[in-house]
Image 1 (tube, rainbow, N blue to C red):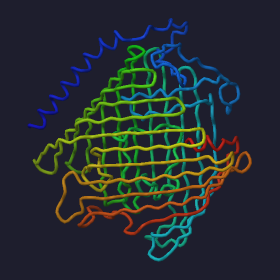
Image 2: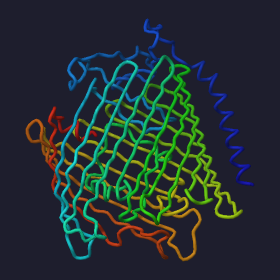
Image 3: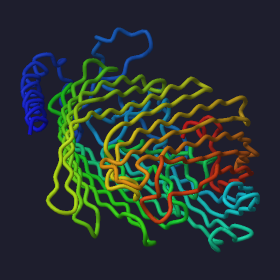
Image 4: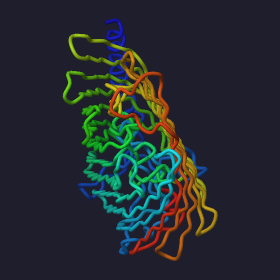
Length: 496
């Protein structure tokens, strides 16, 4: 009860601060631009500033130019800033120095790998045949993005539990609609694989874990993917969300987010979960580059087939800085109250704290990214809720027009919210990968890669059927990718 009273006091203080910010923000707004003749035009945010410009300048909003060719950049040299909000469901990005009005890029992919660690003392031959699709369409009101990557993977010999074919499918679709002061976004991410997406052990391999689509990542507190390895177990993770943003002015924006996530195992022996999250947020632009936000989340996790459940209340303050084409920084932290109820009448509360951050930095030929998350998650099918800490990092370098390289890695620590005697209450999972890329002609892309992944656990038995490989896992090989319609430059590919 003491913790509940503390959190209630924090929430009241946060709401009071929000109400006080409204008149202050209204008084500090820059003069509005003349109303557009287009009745559907959204309220424009503060325009991005050129390097060396005073941050207090209030120049006009960035205009929009168009092209006729589907796969050509816009004719205008003006930058396209990232429009994600600190209080929104996605992480903020660096935007783009040139934008494609339309893009349709299907690709076929053939891979040949060697893998060690699955069978003791044996190297398996792994062949993969698959494809991908990146599609984007942008207009003044509508933005549609579709990403897909999947393959059929064949192991030879099929000595790991007698299974030879391990397919995976990873897809995301996002539709954004803008009308005057309102912005609506609908998004759905789904992954079907024989293991969790973290490290991509059976979803392309650790060497491919650093490759992402053109969409920004969903905030870790809203995503449903697991970070504990469960060996070979068919699983489906899905996150569906909707976000509504209302621009009260050029500086202030209100946000409502609702999301539904599930982690479902098609093989018995693991814990299925469903997660429902609601978020209310307030975003204020200090300048064209700097923003602050205040958010409140209520999260409810239910474990299918049991009476166990988790509920969390989370208040966070956030700071973000964006420099188009160069920098995106996001920092957020705040108190988190966890309510958990297990079989019977036992109920407990726990006061903790949660934090998340992301950093993306790009030079013309070099890019870096770093992310961190700490909070309560559904437990990855192994625990009835876990306290998670996740760190990921990546670096890329374009050496010439045709040659580029990348490094990436990650670490996840999961501890059971309520430890159980005789069973392990902690898992540490980490991966690392490297790739060397070569553009061949206008349509072919060659990738040499190496990946490594290992998971360790605390003392005690595995709480579920299987807790992943007991040995380090390594993968090395070559991938050939064919884009039949058009070829992206190495810098565009590295920026994904």
